[in-house]
Image 1 (cartoon, protein in one colour):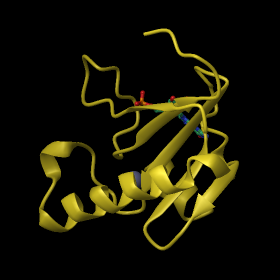
Image 2 (cartoon, helix red, strand yellow):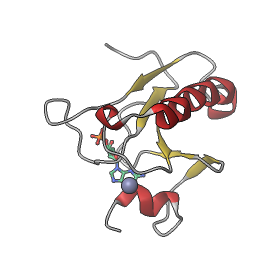
Image 3 (cartoon, helix red, strand yellow):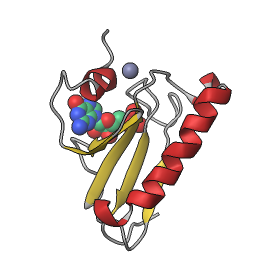
Image 4 (cartoon, protein in one colour):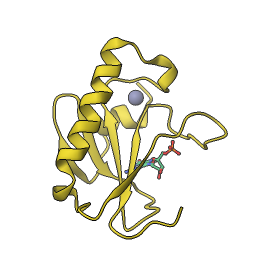
Length: 109
Ligand code: 5GP
Ligand code: ZN
């Protein structure tokens, strides 16, 4: 398995993990674009939203709810921005679906 986020999720590559459960992991982005820049990665490997099915749609719904619940513990009480890059024009470099979580300061648009 050559996917870097699968390896991070499996603990085969070290990362600064802030949260983990049976279906997602949240860790610090290695090149932060804001004071707080986290990546939320479902353990299920799929590249883009084009690969959603009912099960994955439900997984993403639970994932958004978890991010909202974890807000304060992640240091995001003041608010946060979620970004899901899709494909080339968005600059997606890791082809395992992930949600960028940005915050910790007022964010420029
Ligand atoms: P994308 O551009 O695909 O939406 O975002 C990929 C993100 O993964 C980038 O922000 C990049 O900094 C981050 N990233 C890439 N490799 C690693 C890594 O090995 N560890 C961590 N923590 N983040 C990574
Ligand atoms: Zn993967």
